[in-house]
Every structure is written in structure tokens, then in C-alpha cells.
Image 1 (cartoon, rainbow, N blue to C red):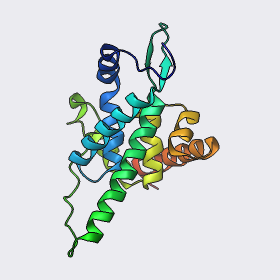
Image 2 (image 1 turned 30 degrees about the vertical axis):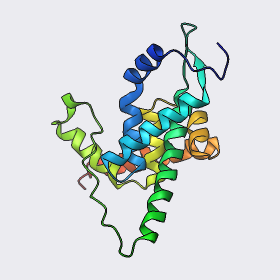
Image 3 (image 1 turned 45 degrees about the vertical axis):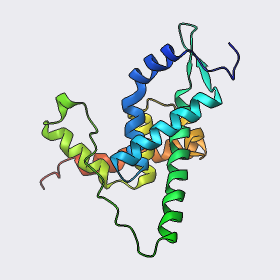
Image 4 (image 1 turned 180 degrees about the vertical axis):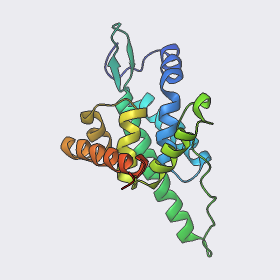
Length: 179
């Protein structure tokens, strides 16, 4: 199979079953609504399919490139945002955007856990550039090199944003010590 030939549909389906939730989580972080996130994810998967970006898995099989998927999601989100801005500028009145829905950061079994809710709230308070790196590193399971490529930033910047984000989360989540 050549580098530009997409893997068979069955391997895409299996790959998407494995990575779909983390890709959707990243798409949610990049967009304003759940529907936009789903649209961005779909567009990104079509772009990834057409690009033929594949990796060789540990078992020797070819599969879509995970870092490439995150890159395509980010690009699709940027394109979608530009389209929305152009549409809003053409219209005589500004469109009211829906409030973003509640993003589930943890699997359903942890959803009721108080600590999970505290962590989720703490993550929401982080600046977007920290959230991106945290999501790609922890939920996306990417290396700093892949994160840097996805976000188009230097690798050291990706690593330092991750470190600073963790430090902020640690300070936010650590109970204040009594004097």
C-alpha cells in the first residue's frame, strides 16, 4: 500500500472506534457547540482519508495517522470559524451563538465522582493554549513532538505549556494548608 493510498475501510472503522472519543473531545475544545464539533470531526476525517496520511502500527498494519487527525481537526475548526465569521459579517444582525454544551472529560463511570468534577472545573479555567496541550497529551495520548506539529508550535513550547498547566491544576486542586 502506498503512502497516499488510504487503509481499507474496515481498518478505519476499527481505528475510529479506538480513537473517536478523544478526537471528538479535541474537536469540542476547538469549537463552540457539540454540533460544530461533530461537523469539524467529520470534515477532518474526510480530509485525513483524502490525504492518505497513514502510520504503520505495531502489528505492521497501516492505519490513519493519529497526530494527523488532530492536525486536521484543528485546521477544520479554523476553517469553520472563518466561515462563521464571514457569514456573520454578511448578515445584517449578529447571530446569537448557542452556549457550549457540557463537555464530558471523563468516562461515564467517573462522571459522578466529586474529584472528577473538581478536575473538570479546574481544566475549564485554564487558558485555551494550556487546555489544548493537556487534552492532546492526556486524552490524545500524543508525544510533545506530535503536539508541537499539531499546534504548529515548537516542541519545547508544548512541553512547557503542559508543565505550566499541570502546575496551575496542582495549585487549584491542592487544598490550602492551615497555618
